[in-house]
Image (tube, rainbow, N blue to C red):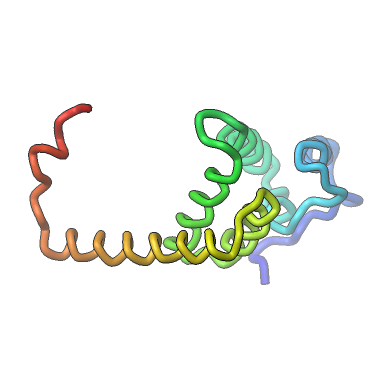
Length: 133
């Protein structure tokens, strides 16, 4: 259960409706999901988060599928069930296969394991990894 009241479109302020309209137009959907409805309880956070997310996730040097898979990997590491579900669906919509998901989760698991080992042993970073390429 959310810790704040979810703001539905019908009860949203004009400021929130403008963000909702942009979300729906940008994503080509007919509704906003619960994440945005929760953030709408504080309109400045809703606007800032949407504007930043829209900018970061726009096509650039990385394609949209790669960005979604990175988002999914970080969400899995952080244990955010909402973001895991949301970005798994989005990545699948952009072409991620079950085999790709399996490999992604294998990399996430391995990275978390080796990160923990490196941190636990407090291993000094090799000089060759410090030099700019």
